[in-house]
Length: 122
Image 1 (cartoon, rainbow, N blue to C red):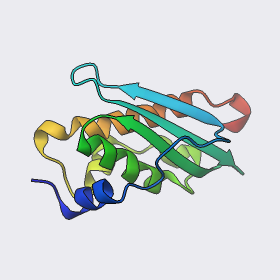
Image 2: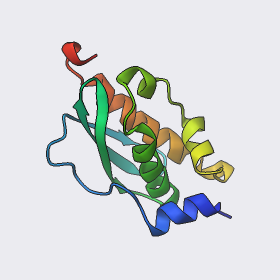
Image 3: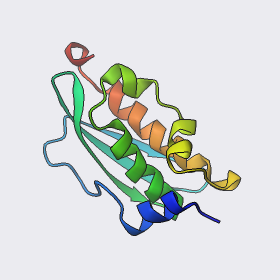
Image 4: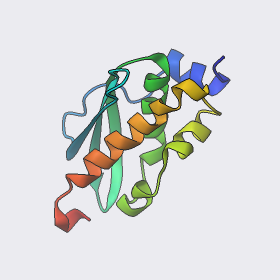
């Protein structure tokens, strides 16, 4: 049912927990299933220096949060803004159709975090 990449992120989630010195925190909630994801970003020199997440949700939401933190670390804000839910799904080697909303949850949390950036950091 789940790809080897999804299972790997479930068994060994990366960057879990609150980032104590986060520059911004983004939050997203899926109103249908109730999953909630908090994304913590530390920014330095115009890039995402570190990312972590906390989630209350189904296993694919955990995998999506884990994959996203790996994808965005080191990116510029401009590059991070261009990411789509499909990019997260692709990084996980696919999700069942009824779980693709988990990738959207992760991207919505990213967009929420980026929307909070001070103008001088854009």
